[in-house]
Image (cartoon, rainbow, N blue to C red; front, side, top):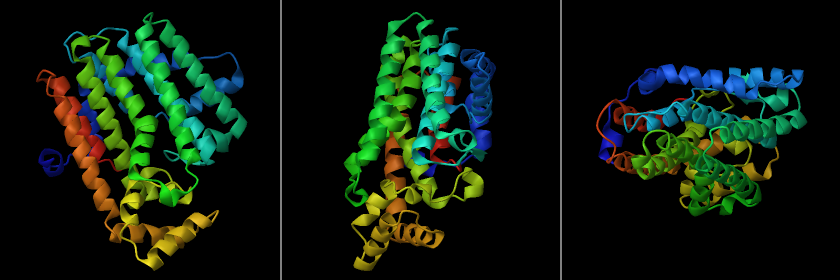
Length: 335
């Protein structure tokens, strides 16, 4: 774990630029491919698609797909389409999640459900999924479909796991890891595995495993950010998970160390339909003082180290270096 925990940090923006450098030209082709896949002659779809592609984010998952495809030294052209499909599936999950959560902001921009309607949001998420899988059919390899339809199923199961957890104070660490494996790690793992099938088949399993562990570390880091980051940085309200009564690793780790009065304050938050800023701030402070954030950070570093270890079979060079840097980028994100 010392390699992850002790590394000198590079500013996140510069770090991502360095990670993407080996595949930057192909990444630009991915963006064009995404536009082509979602093109429609229906005005409202074009309007929503334009908004979504504007808020597509950092293209982290397709970057991983392209890097994985180059791990064997001979990336195949079809990796561009597969990477576009991966990112469209990711966008679909965000659209659905924002609708389910009634979120109004995503990356500092209005969500589809707030800008249009919840009905449009749900249908648009479905549209992105179907167009992505239609594009995948054109790749002509059932193995890609097998992997990514499996991911679509995992994403659905993950969302249902979250909705079914009625008593947040009983949500366990085991429940949490099962949830993030489905909701986050499954797609990042698939991004790496499908990339490997586009030029680096001999490294399919280590890249799949790397992606799964990276996805777990990614979500833990994201959940820590919800407790520590300013909304001006993240582009969404701070403490959003607590506002939506979502229990993540920092709170799970803190629960066993709370006094009676502190636990009562946390339970008060979950009893309030719309907890106010003061209550959110109090619970964040309680969790931090109980060591929940630090415990989550240590767990994230442990899993991140396992991700780095999974890269051992990958040949030394720019690709392996970029995949390793992706781990540190994930662990040191600010948004």
